Image (cartoon, rainbow, N blue to C red):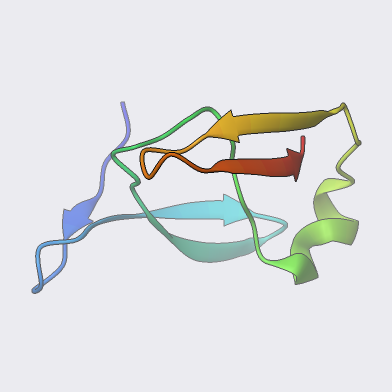
Amino acid sequence: MIVGQVSADGVPVLRLDIGGQVWPAIIDTGFNGDFELPERLRPIVNPRFICRIRSFLAAGQFAEEDN
């Protein structure tokens, strides 16, 4: 179970322990399976490139991102 809070302005927030530090995380209700972290955590989590994806956005546009 994930436990969090709702901020004063109605934003759902939780805290993640990554690399020995606690980071605030906003819950994105449009979650698409990707997880974004601050650049300064790159050496701690050692991410690997998997592929490049192309997403179709609600505004009728496409976005390309490394995955």
